[in-house]
Amino acid sequence: MPTLSGDIESERRAFTHNRVRISQSVADGLVREIEDSINRDRLPAGYRIGTKQELCDRFGVAPATLGEAMRVLRARGLIEVRPGPGGGLFVAEQSPLIRLAHSVLALRQSGATINDVVAVLDALDAEVLRDAARYRTDADLADLDALIEELAAVWNDPAAGLHCNWRLHRRIAEISPNAVLRTFYLNLVDYIESESVGESSTFDVMGFHPDTDERLQIHRDLVEAIRSRDESAQTGVLQRHRTLGR
Image (tube, rainbow, N blue to C red; front, side, top):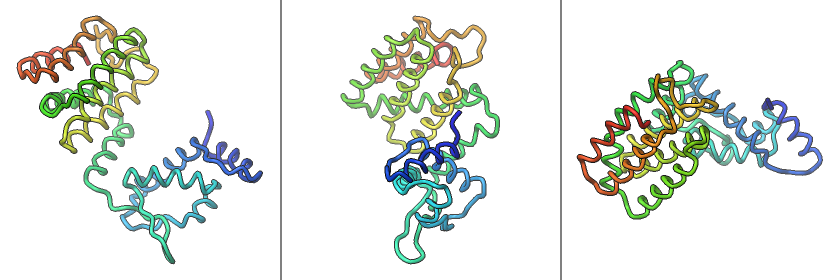
């Protein structure tokens, strides 16, 4: 498996030959290095990480690659950039939502199982579905219909079906205007999907079969309950989804 140090060495050779380019694998690795350092060492808001030049020298990366890593870190609310003398990259003051997202990402280190996370997701589904039905637009419904058709096309493919299923759940959650609900739900879905990669089924549940026609129909019915805004339909499909459809 490629390592950050190996990728950095490849970039250093390319940079030495005056071919400035962005190595996405190095940028991703740099993001992880800086993010892990902030979380592991509990660096406080305002802590000076270093100047751009200092970080390029420390990690042996090109300025363009550092710039890409900075873009991601700023988008995640992890760093801020201050210009002028004494400036550089500093640990940002994190909002409660950002801290919540990082707490979810830390579940992997605590050994949480997929089924533990699914139990919490099940508890949130009613609010997510209710918001989706209440606030959905024609554009939202068009996206959900397209995802259902894509899901039907890949339903019997374990990997493609898994990923498409979670894209559907993400799109439903994205309709909610409740930022806390939306952020927490989406991060839980990301965790479940990342931990399910390479598995033939989403969960270790006796009798669970991921590609039955009944399970596909449940997902169709989820979208129809959002379309109709029928609360009794929402209640019924949520019960079927919790027991068979996830």
